Each structure stands twice: as C-alpha cells, then as structure tokens.
Length: 320
Image 1 (spheres, one colour):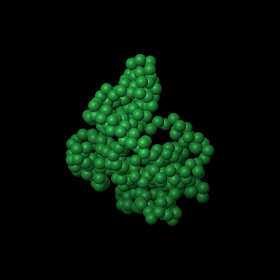
Image 2 (cartoon, rainbow, N blue to C red):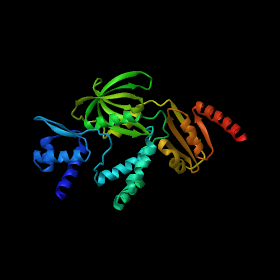
Image 3 (cartoon, rainbow, N blue to C red):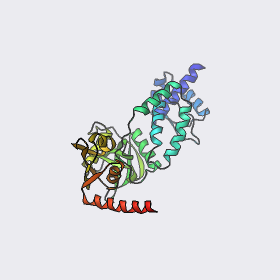
Image 4 (cartoon, rainbow, N blue to C red):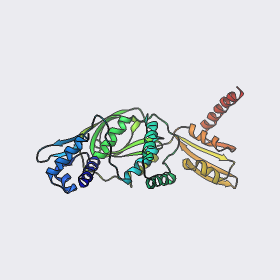
C-alpha cells in the first residue's frame, strides 16, 4: 500500500509538470506497466483529480481543469520558489494580485518545515528586486498574464493585439519565450513570426491573447537571458529628458540614494554632479527632493519650471 501511495503521488507530480504525457513514456517514468498506469490514473480520478485520457496509438494523459482546485504535490525546491515568488507578487503591479498573494503566502509559510522557512527567509534577505524607479502606466490583466505564462510553459504559439507607444495597434503572431518583470512592468520576450525577429512586448499594452494550439521548437535568444534582452531594448529607446544637477552633498551619499537611476560624479568632497535620463520629469524632481540637500538644476529648463510649480503648490498647501 505504501508503494502504491508513493507511486500515486509521483504520478500526480509528473502530470503537474507537463501539459501532456504519452502513456508509454509516463509508464516508463514510473517503472510500471501501461495496465498499472491505468489503475493509478483511476485512483487519481477517485480522489478528485480530473485526468483526461486520449486513446489510440499516440494516446496519453493530461490534467484538466476541475470544478475545484485539488491539492498540489510540490517538492522542497518548488515550495521555496513558491514562497519567494508570492512575496514578490505581494508587491505586484498585476491588478488584484497583491492581497491574494499575501494571503496565500501566509498559508504556505505556516505549514512549511522549519528548514524550508530558513531557506525562504535567507533568499528574501539577500534578494534585490530589479527596479529602475517608480512604476508608471496601468496594471496587467491577470487573465492576460495567465494565458501568456501558460503559452511560454507549453511552447505554444500565441496571437494577440498590441498597442505600441505611439498608439498604433497591430495584430501579432509569436512564439513566446519568457516573461520578465522589470521596473515593476511585465514584458513578454517572444519571436515575432511575421517580422522574423525577436521582440519584447509590454503586457499592459497586450490584449486578447489566444493560444493557436501549434507547438514550436525553441529558438536561440540573441542575449544572455530574457531579462538582458529586455534591458538592451529599453536602453536603445530614446529618453526625451536629460537631467543635470549640482547637489551640495558627498557623491557617496547621493550615489547610495539615487545612483541606480543615473550617474554621480564628485566635484568636491561635499558636492557632486548628478545626470539622469527620464521619460517624465516627475521622477527626477522627486529624486532630487528626497535627498534633503541643497541642489541647483543645470538642465533642462522644463525641470526648473516644474519645480517652481511644485514649490508654489506646496507652499499653498503648507499655508492652509
């Protein structure tokens, strides 16, 4: 009975790792006959797991969507990854996800063995999220994120509508590769079949993704990884505002506070020069104000105008 129960859990774990398993391959992975595999599949169904079967020479099995979420089987590494991922999702820009992620994280950590809790806390303590500033733009539709994530996992071609930065809309047919979250925005890295080249797409500009059912062989990404591909694309984009300011504070102090968003050069031991590029002047204004030091804006004139407007409004607010 113990061997049967262990094998059933192993079968469930395998079914959860792939969308579809050929029957012969699945039986071989479990070290049992096809007939025994069928009995184990029936046992999973009795426990409430909706396992679908495809008959014939190329027949196999896959987990289907059920009326309720059944218990999942995950190993130690997956449990740690789940907890760390939920912690990140608790600060997610995806609408409606943060609160739910916090609730699930509490449940997961509560039942974790102490040894896994220590690993989770260690990972969270040394992990620095990739964040280049405050998030702008709208949130991502969770349904869009789910459809695209499943397509990446299953190697399935996807069609969707996409709105570019200039407002122009296009229909895309892609081979999805990876999802990347940078600057609290989600990006899809994919091979665009119509343009025969790699592209990155912001998910908040992507609508109506639909899987085509067609599978594809993975291609070689022209970058070290998907995150680096997205970074390179963002770095090539023109930034309309070039900001330069003299700050009455040591370079080390300013670099520690806002250095990740610009370059800091020492002028004297107690003065430095900050240069930044930005799509909007709001963030440089907030960054300079957060330093708590005197500063002089050298460029652009539009930033001086913005600061004058802010200071006038702030003065009125303080007077009231």
